[in-house]
Length: 276
Image 1 (tube, rainbow, N blue to C red):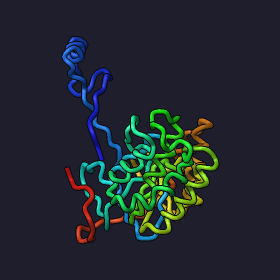
Image 2: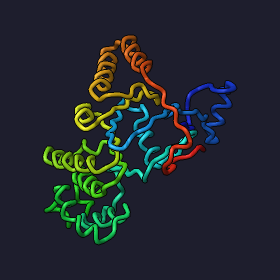
Image 3: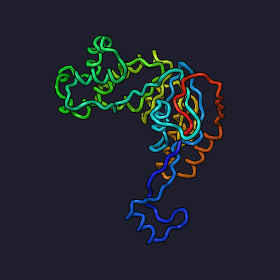
Image 4: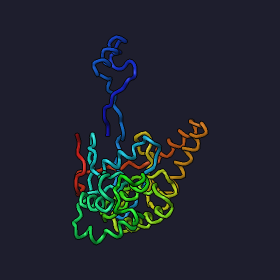
């Protein structure tokens, strides 16, 4: 997965002169550079697996989730899925001027739920959000935490076969976290497979059966949760202490143990992404 962005860096292909760089900036012609968000990653996830995705900021975690969910198109290759993956997050766009209960209906309709189903699930959604006393107030009067809890509760109302969770459990107070994790356990048991992105290694180990470690757009490790998170923590600990050489050694050793997975076109399923 690659894309082009503007860059203000000096020089570049062709070695533009200072005068030319000034002219380009004046005309709005910024130099374009290619960013490789993900690099040649192939993997297969089976039904019943719960896959954690870990890595430093900028490692490609969110890009991978966007590709799996169909929100992005891969530069090359494709994503195949047995059904439509559902992204469960706290960033769903609701309407601030509407009351919380109206946003519950709006959000559920946007996810394809019928009004009869929304009516049946309404009380449980409000209970999960913890906003029983505020659900009839305009959402613009909510704190950011209250808004995040409502978005999560709405998103968690669905029961998808393929579930993607991007940091949704890292918001709210202790009581909300407890309620949300219980709901996540239910979703995980009902879903065919789950992808979970989180900076909390404890959450990853607790909720996943398999973990992917990404770094600079590359798949470094794909394995058992305790082993993978342990290698990643050792890597980041060495980096934090300035031991870049030993950190690089840990990453190289993990990457060398990877087994390449070949994906053949005969695999059946919905094509969530296609070459562009």
